[in-house]
Image (cartoon, rainbow, N blue to C red; front, top):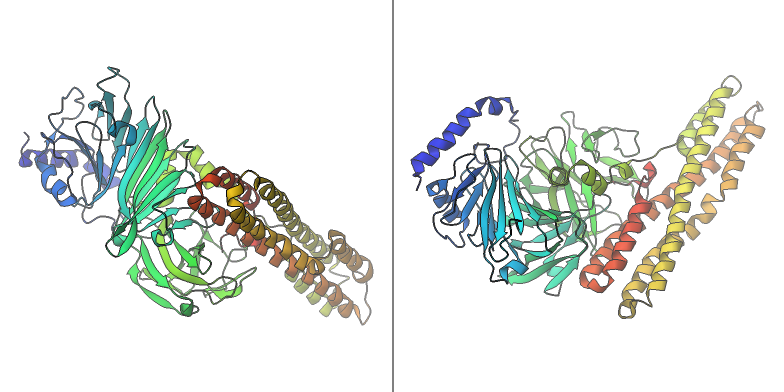
Length: 624
């Protein structure tokens, strides 16, 4: 057996051999993502005996006594269990291949975070044999071979790469069901398009629930210090999560995931003090500034999932204070958004304007010291009531290279093509055409106040062309939402015959869709017809553009005010329509968790919602 001093010697040798690599890596001083620097290598070890289930402290105390398999050696016969470690996680594979334990790593501390098994293998008398496929300082790959089948094709394989906080599992030639045992306070299905689905075990009476299979599951655990992620390809089955009472609280204890033949699964462990945070909010907190007992552990785009009074979630990204006291709002791709893009804040303050909400104080931010703050909205349309959850959703320019966010894991595991599809980067683009009606009013009113209409004829024509383009663009989005509502509501009504036991749930969904139609009917007098908007612009050209009488300004204001009334109602309606669809998207997903029999229906409706939410007009305030 290799002695601890020899293990340490080999580790130091690897460190010295890669000194140039380490020096070339930029390590920001603004955040530290582990307790101490550790060697950026992978290690394969033989425990020498069966060590069964090890808690984190036991794993940490024994790991330096295990024999390291020399680099490039792949013909080793293991005498005990198999350990894999890198600078981010530790993995212990039991000798029979039936249990895999996962530990996050912070320096030389290895908290135990999860245990993975496959139902079909655990129930079988077949013990698997571990074979080494690759063993290098950069990557370890193992194949687990059936001893009964006498086949060289692995039942499944594992690989761990340097610097990666996740284990990659590739399924072989048969369907398996992965059982991931862990303790978590919340489960999230992050929605990169709208609002997350948050599963709070306290709000789910059954012992288990089926969640929509959408490639990513995020579990918040470790009382704020750990995030466990599952990412997968090609699974068509729902994820089943199990709940149990643990002391005074109810928590998630297991997640079951279908692994098809030749499917792939990744399990990631993100460990850092305060990598997620919870703060309970009541409706009495509305409008109050709440300093959090929490600082960001590293710069990133931090998402806040607010629980609303209706039980659904409203997802916001935190803004960041600048040295001059202003605030920066990062876009979905990690870049800072600017005033005038349609997704902006009042200069120098947290005041923000969107359709539906109007002017309000942006409700979540980080100050210059990294301290987090909340200020729940004081708006009737959205009332926060319940836990507010904060976690790192995406990378920004200042995020250290060795820190990972949820989107980082998705990108690194699935690759560019599938990841871009899941994030729907193309569909995130916001459209803005022409100029807003209030901007056109201000331009035209100023010209006619100063009686410059004749010398500014081209500018007047351009303003009229631009404002008509704007009104047509918003109107086209409204018509798309109305068509979506009519078609989807009809689809849901038809499905009641196929789901007779869920008629009340489907009626609830149809009623929610009906709110979009009701908003349209309520706003119809204000927006008029498309022909009415065109006629306003035509009237301005024929009656006002070249008119120089004393009442020219009055005539100008009469029409520009009418144009603004159309614009205001259209802007509010398109924002209201988007809000209804976002609620529908989340509600049908949660409903399917409690009623798995409508899973296919829920998937169809969520697909429809994503289609209509793509490429929004900027005035829809797609990301608050």
